Image 1 (cartoon, helix red, strand yellow):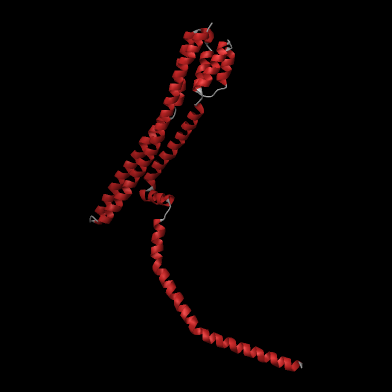
Image 2 (cartoon, helix red, strand yellow):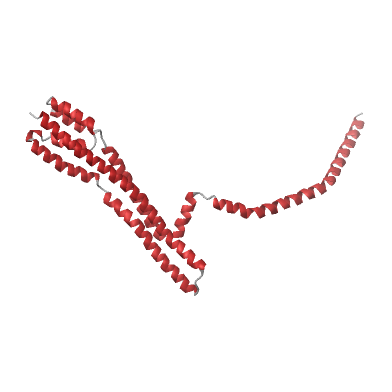
Amino acid sequence: MKKVIALLSIAGLLTFMSANAQDKNAATPEDTTAAATEQVDEQAAEAEAPAVTEETAESKSFHQVLKEKYIQGGAGWMTPVLLCLIFGMALVIERILYLNISTSNVKKLLSGIEDNVSKGDYNGAKELCRNTRGPVASIFYQGLDRVDEGLENVEKAITSYGGVQMARLESNLTWIALFIALAPSFGFLGTVIGMVQAFDDIEAAGDISPTVVAGGMKVALLTTVFGLIVAIILQIFYNYIVSKIESLVNQMEDGSITFMDILVKYKR
């Protein structure tokens, strides 16, 4: 019985193997067709590759385009323009933070000072000014500190210390203005030198080729473009800072007048 089962198993195995061999032989033409199809697909992909590359080039990020233009403009002349932007923006941020910290509610401060002065509590008024941030509170504190010396000395103290506070508000503005002037100046200088180099290339080539002229002009003008962009950015922030300073100075002047009126009203 075991021999019969073994023979049947061997026969079944041989039958299965022959069937697989027939399937492979039958599949050979299909495999050939599939291989041909894959080859055609690869050729089509290679034909479409330039189009994909062009699409990728068109979809470059702003950072990549900016980096390429920076390299084309030449690191020797683009770096000073970039440094003007970095240092200028650092000073701009410092001024904006300082001016925002210096802003205070002058009406609320004057109301508190009047309440204390009406009661004769000048120390309380000085403490209120000491705990209030901003140049206006500092000016009022200097005035209250000289109340015993007379209103004339109070007015002089307010005037002189107001000038000191104004100078602090305008600190670093000259440096920002310097970077606004330097950025396009470096750009123009790079453009002029780039133009000279372009003419040197034309002289060396011995022919005025449109490609040489256009390439040299493009590279030369990139420094000017970047310099003007930096100057425009810094100029916008500079004007904002100046307007903020003017607003604070107006608060100082109006508050000082009201402060003197309060002292005149309640001074005994």
